[in-house]
Amino acid sequence: MIYKRKTFIVLLFLLLIPIISISNFSLWIDEGTTAFLASFNSYSNLVNYLIHYTGSEAQMPGYIIFIWIWAKLFGISEIALRAANIPFYILFILSIYKSSFSRRMKVILLSIVTLNPFIWYNMNEVRNTLIVFFLAFIIIINLLEYFNNEQKLKNIYILGFTFVIGIAFNLLFYFLIIPIIYLSVNYIIKNNIRLKQLLDDIKIPLISTIILSLLLLIYYFFTLSHGAGGMRQRPGIANIGETLYEFLGFLGLGPSRNEIRDKTSVSLFLNYKYTLITYSGLIVLAIVVFSLFFKKLKKTNIIFKNNFLIAFLSSIVFFFIVSYIMHFRFWGRHVSFAYPLLILYLASIIDAIIALKPPKYFFYILTLILLFCTFSSLQIRFNPKYQKDNYKLAAKIIIRLVRNNNFNVVWAGNDLTAEYYGLYFADTTYISSFPRIVRVYNDDIFENESQINNKKKIIVLFKKYDLFDPTGYWRNYIARNNYKKIEDTQDFLIYGQKN
Image (cartoon, rainbow, N blue to C red; front, side):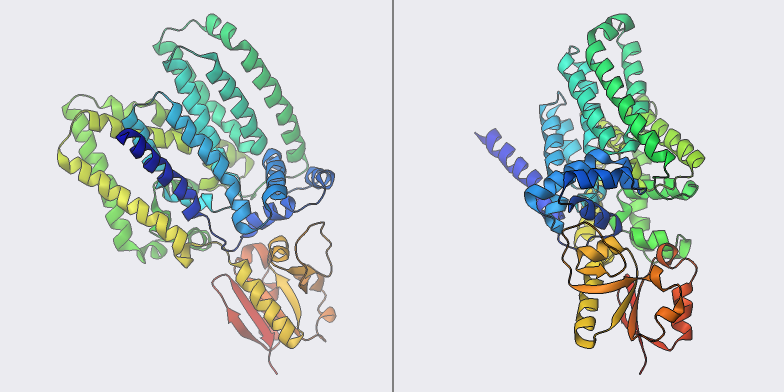
């Protein structure tokens, strides 16, 4: 009875995490695009649009179709769309619960995941980042279950099915093949499994998975040949650094993602030096103390020859090489398929330490790190500075200004997210069910100044100038034509003409 009560309390806590982490804060650019695609009234219109679309969404067709169906069931509010992450979170919890991991290992894994700033940030987002993460985790769990527990074929069927869903949801999921192969080969060698017998056992799910994967790969080659994809820019060491910054829990302790994106410099991090130094010091202390402890017991292979660590590093290195060749600038969210391996690595080390009954100060170090991660997660959820681009506030201000003063609005920002909040464009027609409250003009139509010189207007500039004012055209226009700043939000500047 006591065990059942404890289990109920734990499950209740786990279910509260997504409820607390999801909010109705403004959608940002990528979320606005997802919401736009989810708002199509017709499935055929959605598919036709997606086939010819050149944004990164063309490389996540399964997710777009899923979110479209989800929107038809639950609506397109911010909370409804973001709640699409919850079913996959529950599947992940069930996978952990039904796995053969020890009870202690399960608690460690769930603690790392549920109090993780990366999870909290992406749970509150209408993108497939967390879905990819949870699907990758389920695959790795089933791979471990197959090799560690009597090689049950159902685990391979689950693995294959989940892999196909994963690659349908995101092209980048193919990169999970590297750690899958590495871990499989390692277990085959370790357990002296005959390869021919193994292939005979798994040939049906294996062949089915390969065929479906190749069919999807043909589609992805088609999208790539037509120019679909993300940011075309060569990644560098800074991109790996930013990925680790997200994965190791710094996301709510230092500069926000937007700050790092705008200005990656030492001076930016100095503003958060005390928090960052303390947390970094705890991580370094943990690495040193734990390494010395294992060295004393002659068990250093637990840290340095860990299969999860090798699989994680190999997938990151391979992904970086391909991204470098393809000129694909990535962030932590693009590598979420590899993050489960890092979490399993950390959990296995903590589990091994506890099993060896270390001194109490080991637990003090771990508790402090966990408290910092929890604080980081709460910062991400409740501190406005760590929120996404606030298109909702900008649209609210514009609607008020237009209704009170009958301005014409020049919009230099993402048009799809603007439309979600009621701004619609006179020069562009989109098939969507977004509200149409105030008409505005996309900045592209005004390259000829004669079209706007005689109109009373306000100009709205999104502060990510590299995306929406790369040439400085509008900033120069504002400087030349007697404009004054009306509003200055965290993400937008709104200018009006002086009387």
